[in-house]
Each structure stands twice: as C-alpha cells, then as structure tokens.
Image 1 (cartoon, rainbow, N blue to C red):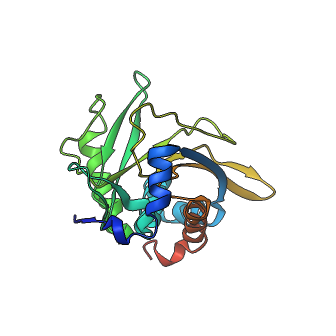
Image 2: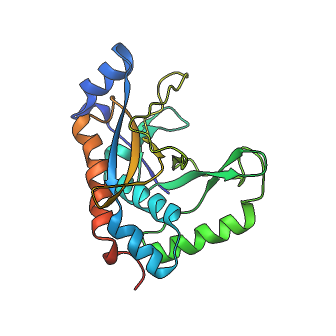
Length: 218
C-alpha cells in the first residue's frame, strides 16, 4: 500500500484538475449494461458466487488505470495508490439494513474469493455500518441494489466535492435478446476522469466478463 504524490507542476492534467475542482466542481455518473452471460454460466458451473466475482472485476479494472486510483490523501496531497482494495455493501435481511465490509485485494481471483468468504463468515452478521474495522485508506466503494434492473443511477455526495475515487453500483441482472445483462453505474469526478476514462471502466468490465475463463479457477 504505497501512495505516490503527483508533482503538480509536471502533471499534464493540472489545468483540468484545477478547473473541475476549483472553478466548476463537477462529478458525473454513467450507467450501462454489462453482458455477463458467459461469466454467470462459468460461475454456476463451478458453484461460485457472482457478487465477489463482480467485486474482483471492478477492483481489477480500477487497478489497471491510475485515473481511478487518484485521490487526495490525509495530508491533502494529490496522488495515486499503487493498488486498491474493495469496500462493499452487504445486506441484512432481518432488519433491511446494510453494512460496509472490506476485503484485501489479490490479483489471483481464487485467493480473493477465499478472503471474501472468510470475511463474510466472520462479519456478515455484524449489524453496524462498518462491519469490519481498520479499513485501509486505499479502498474503493462498491454497492449492490439487486432488487432493481435500473437504467440510470446517480449519487449526490454533499461534502466538499473532493472525493475523487470512482463509486460503483451494481443492479439486478436481467435477460434480453438471449443475453444476461447487468446494470452497472459508475460515479466519477471530472477533475481526474473524463468521459474517455469512464469508458475504460465499462470496457474493462466487459472484457473481463467475456474472458472470464482466463481468470476464474480451472
């Protein structure tokens, strides 16, 4: 877990960062469907869960691009983490509340999947906002709304507007034209992510879903 401060004077993105942070503070959201037909079939054949696979796919895509790892650290420095781990929501059926749970990321999906299962076994019944303490600063938020196949989703974050990391929200998958489609919404900060960078999130997720045999356990 290493934070790399950015030299602002040599950062090509400096004028964009300053404009969208200091002059026109701006975040935006984008929603698209991810084709998970192949992914879901492979997971079912292996008796594995979809949610941790999606969490891993999102985190892996984030780790592929510095723009998704750029943020302001506790000292107020702009920079990027060398890698991120996911912080994701889990639902409590008993009282319809949720908790945030984080799991240490691993590029190897089998390792991550086992860590996820261990964390769920330990903390799934902890009914408080943060189910697992000591969350590291290099986490990205991921949430799921598995009851709605939404076609659009937007978060309104009322703070200083300096939260730069992407926020991911997963919807309920549905069948259409012989495919299984999953709504995915990404919230981005324009200071570090333009439309092109946002597109990399969606194309990265689709590529991982299409090529799932390459990273799922044999």
